[in-house]
Image (cartoon, rainbow, N blue to C red; front, side, top):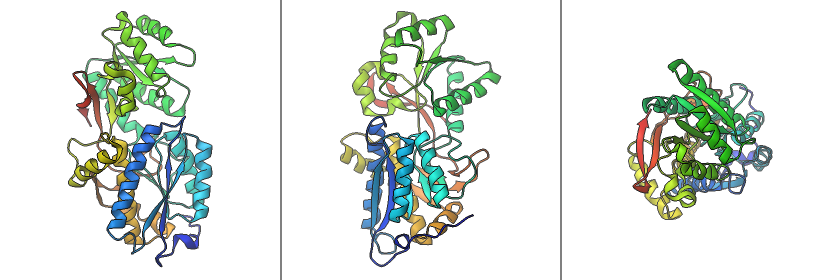
Length: 370
């Protein structure tokens, strides 16, 4: 591993703060609600670490930068945070943005623990500098495809927009479903409005429509149009990327937003730590924390353990990924090399397919687990 020297600020253990850079989407066009949950988890974990004595007796400081779902802005933030001397990077929700951040972190020799992005190819080449908590997209979306088949859906339509993330998701679904008799029809929402989309769904006799599009536009108008089209009364709407996880979804769509299965990265039961964290973040946000909040907390829990054990030198942090064994909010976290994945990957993060209960839209039903 090429080891650029750590700047002096990353090595001090003399009472100064240990800085961790945090990349978070907090403004549009980023998914700001996801960013707020991610930041809430990161901040709570930093408070817990500091109350427990910090890192080698020094307090942890979170240095937050808003990526706004902009890859160039994220890459520039990585450059700035590296110059400031942060010991490591944490966070990011959007896969394409995380990919830009991971490339810069790798080039600069800055350890990056990615919280939430799932794109398999987070870097072009294998790297020692980057690790990830979220499951790779291939694993999660294959589990979602199995759920579709188990519920009798083999004629799948995807409403999609141009993006490497959506294109990769479509390919994963098609590759997994085709050998099992399933078909995937792409409907480009840059060329269709919601009404025209409904006509296409009827023409293709689709039994399920998956929303591989941005939130709230055009996801929310699509759901409204499909729900109101009597020809599509039996079609299932799905959202593997997790749009219905957040309260804004229920606020905008009401009853129309229920019964839309999505992927969420929580276990059936949280660990004792997870139960405590859930209560604290619920009080902080005045709403139930999403899985993204737990990913944020676990990110700092892992980095704090690594920095306490191996010191705050960047190279030693990167070398420590294969030795991590941390009890997080959702289970024990360990990293390994996974075939086809270029970064250090949490072995078995929990994956569920859930939806909002039509009888009680604030309650989630577990439909499938992998």
